[in-house]
Amino acid sequence: SYDPQKRAFLFNFGSERTRPAYNADNAWDICLNKVTRNNDGTLTVVLVHKGPPQSGRIELTKTYTLKQREDGSLFFVSGRWDFVNNHLVSLTGDYQYYTEITGFAGNMEELAMLGEVDGQPLLANTPYEKGKTASLLLLNPATMHVEKQLDLQAKFEATDVRLTDKIVVCLKDKIITVDQALEETKDLPLPPAIKAKMARKPEYDQYGIPDIFFGGYDVSRDLKTIVYADEIGVKLFNIADNSEKLLAPSVLIEGSKLFNKSYHRHPRFVAHEQKVITIMTAYEGTLGYTLCDLETGTAKTYDISSESSSTGCIRYDSGLLEVNTHLYNREKQTAECKTLYLDFRTGEIKEITLEDPGDTNDIRWPEHCYVGQDYAAFITRKWDSSDPAQSMFYLNRINLKTLQLEPKIISVKAAQTYILGVLADGRILFWYNLNPSENGVCLTK
Image (cartoon, rainbow, N blue to C red; front, side):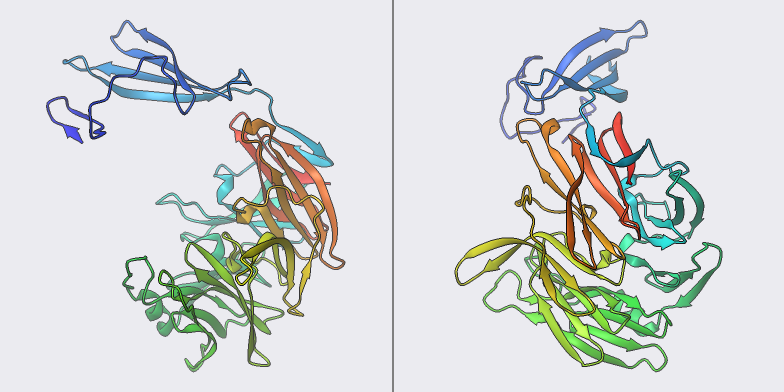
């Protein structure tokens, strides 16, 4: 709350609390190191962030400048964080290291690899920060340098863009197509019927479940057909005559008070546009996949998804990989952890045996798996809760033609590791980050 007499914001804990000593135990391992009063009346305060007690290391120093008010209270003027390079990160395996992607000054977490153009990875940079627009980049993998960049002057997410014979960006009012050389762009107005679906304002129940829903859309290569999802189900829309066909309805969930309906989300044309796949929503998670066959008019469901799964992350017309997914048997009240590959063309699920699956109880993020044209890659990990610097991250590769597994081709100690993409020849583009002093971009050989 704001105290006008003290001209400061105060924390109200509901009861009087004693002022802690400067060296009191702190749950965040942050300790006061030094306070200096400067000649201009300001104070310089240095805090240190320590690692686990048994490590004896300092990981971060925080330096703040404060000024004093007339009543003696202090306020912050400026500050900086300085991370200590303790040389905790180590990599093993056959790879090429780069300090950064030159020509790219953004956030690595906002990069997504869409595919390849003449051997060069095509990346989408989708900044989250307000006011910044998305762009497309062509990367030279030999030099890790951005050869070409195109700012689309639009804001979209990585799930809104994909690469076929051209780059297609699905926006709320139009579809932007870009040639693979990043030179020519064209705008196609979105049909009014689809725009109207997106413009509706839903109402939410006490659990946050909407009564109306729009789950995104995709467009065919010839730009004549749209597949989209609403609260009714996933539908095929003909742009020429505005006709539409229901491919699969939303699913009613019996016996659930929290979430009584599962909606289709992120529909995608797959299997040479002979099929459409969607992810099914659920309360705080997903319920599985639905694969619609446009030739036979049938739909098949797969209960194999995890918390972070999304068909919006599909980059190639090959398949889906679910690593360490938990398959629940509701009758027996048991669960099995398996790694499964869903082939779009055949609709078959094949199990991939992992001799060492690593930790299996953590949420897997989309950046921990990438299905490419002929190869897929995924990350497994072993987390050390007593000292995260001892944690291990492993890159694994799968040949999608033979489903042959190459386990632990790269090992990374201490640093969170993320897959940016997999090239056609099987090389994995990945990056790791512990702090600003220990990070990098790598390409397997």
